[in-house]
Length: 520
Ligand SMILES: Cc1cc2nc3c(=O)[nH]c(=O)nc-3n(C[C@H](O)[C@H](O)[C@H](O)COP(=O)(O)OP(=O)(O)OC[C@H]3O[C@@H](n4cnc5c(N)ncnc54)[C@H](O)[C@@H]3O)c2cc1C
Image 1 (cartoon, protein in one colour):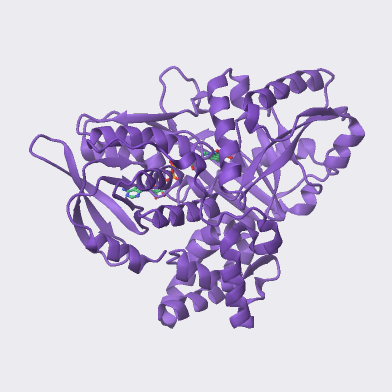
Image 2 (cartoon, rainbow, N blue to C red; image 1 turned 60 degrees about the vertical axis):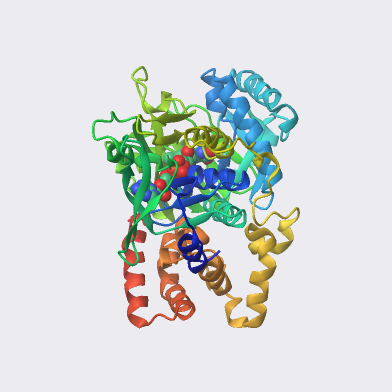
């Protein structure tokens, strides 16, 4: 998967595309896989890097959503639990099951949550993970040794899925590519063109690297721009009413010593009525999230002070050693592309179901939903897009489609397990040049070979692409990522045939972004 090959496909294409997708997050790339596997001609354009938006900033859960159960949204939970099962089967190198302990400090909590989580098991049917059960106080502390022991009565354990969001997205992009799709990062859909009847028949694309603008013809445009959905809708119809109510969620990342043991903590009711998780992730502890309505979406959202304080104070209620600001290794924010509802009083109550919105001009916007349900969202939206574009009817085949990198026993690759079947190629780079085998920083496992691989085969274009989304360095330890940046820039410039000026500019640009992930 290289940019050169993608441009070759673009230039070689004649006539209108069957489907043009704007947005390279989980929704857009999922739709590209779906469309390509049905044999449609599909082009996806992402204005920044794949996953730069919300899709690299999630809580990393492949889940049915225990909270939606409480809201009585049974069908949403069942659908997500089915998708959870399919994703584990199709991408076992990136998804695994994880035990979540709900600690009980009140007498009524064990029977209450015990019963609710039994229902959660039941709804998963044949797609079930482990069985939930009530834990004694001793069992609870054995699983989560860092829990505050005072007043602890016991807990309830249930099982859900965990994954690496940006890594899955990159492997999904490779899957789409292998199925014949053309995908370009750093190319924006800057405008839409219409035919004489006012129907959208093309898009104006702008390459952010070269500044080049070109017009592309297409039978239908899928708007999968997440929190930016309304921007493209307004381009199609300046009078369009907004449908997105953006809401921000942040996470704090700590050293793993704050959460030893193999299980996660799930707090079902924080003081603001939300769910909070503390999850082991890539050798660290990830704690979040919040739900703060915001006025407008930005590509690099910033955590608010009150969100940081809220997570620290909630964590202090449950953890034996309360984390402080000084313990935060990284802080990151993401924006939920929630669909507006005039009835909902706050964003936490808004539906997480997805919505497909079709404008009179034929622009098809798909938004809302969850990472977990991306495959189902893609199936629904490509069904609709095919109708709009009068494409031949072809069934969706992604239920049983292995994601690129599929490997039934990727654990054997150690720190490279997230690459699945690609790990062997990265090991070969390390063997050819042993200087690329050592970690680039003492605090993180990432090696020079991974940087080379990302530049050669995963369309990483910038130091940020490598440190934020091909590896997860920025999300795990922002200061370490900043310290790694010059080495990463050096390795990339050697791959691209760039010079010292390019390296300096790249390091400077990365530092500017990375400063937002450091808590002072
Ligand atoms: C804090 C938080 C935690 C979450 N946790 C979970 C979880 O644990 N599990 C789960 O299942 N779901 C979770 N979600 C939900 C999930 O992350 C989102 O539903 C999903 O990532 C949305 O993907 P998307 O592709 O629609 O949007 P995005 O990932 O934001 O992608 C949209 C893309 O469109 C691009 N774009 C915008 N305008 C243009 C244009 N004009 N031309 C080209 N490209 C453009 C953007 O750059 C962006 O990359 C969470 C969400 C948040 C905010």
